[in-house]
Image (cartoon, rainbow, N blue to C red; front, top):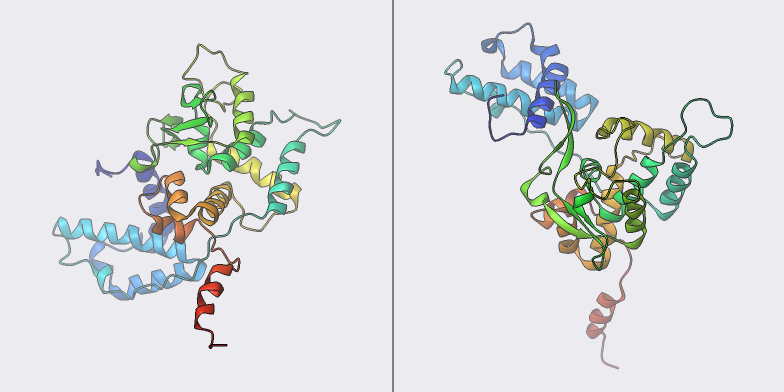
Length: 306
């Protein structure tokens, strides 16, 4: 945890996953008792639950063993001698227009019923959905937008992605002054529907308080991403979309897919803040399966003479 090149959020995640994934299996072994056979058994058990779980477990245990090698506690990193895990095929999935419509309707109606007990919805998650759809941002990036980060007078209106909301052990929820990666710093144009929502949020703020977040809790603190995700799961349940592996990140994939299909993969990568199109293509843009007429027109040149 002394690695200065990793963010505090990454270190917190490693600590949590070490406690949950690795220690339950290895806590009764010394580092010299960690053998290839035990690692193989451990990874098979993790892989039986899911590939991501096994991948994270392999990474964490490999880092621990590498540290032990550097401290000359063990002679070599046994992780390098274990079987490689084959990644299962994965195709990014965008939301359909019907799913987006159902989510929007459920978000508008969330906690607005007559006679409902408890606090009524303040509409923030509904607005967050629109902003994420219109900007293809990560949830932390959308929640980190401040009054000074938006320019509604530009043509088109634009937002500056310059931070993210993080949750650190012992420090709570706060705005980090940079997004996930250096390349994630970007200024993007937003469509009119998202700009309209941002203008509504701006109308609620003191124009002089330029650092104020667009989205905030009832006590004027940053919204926690996990609370937004919890509300979003409830909205999905009301929309009849529960259990379909839809998360707030699905809006980012949906935007990436539309941009890639209409403007090309590079345009999608630029919007998402990726250094290359390979990440966009592999994890965000659903393949365009529309049949295009141009290849058939070109291949027609191979037709036999009349």
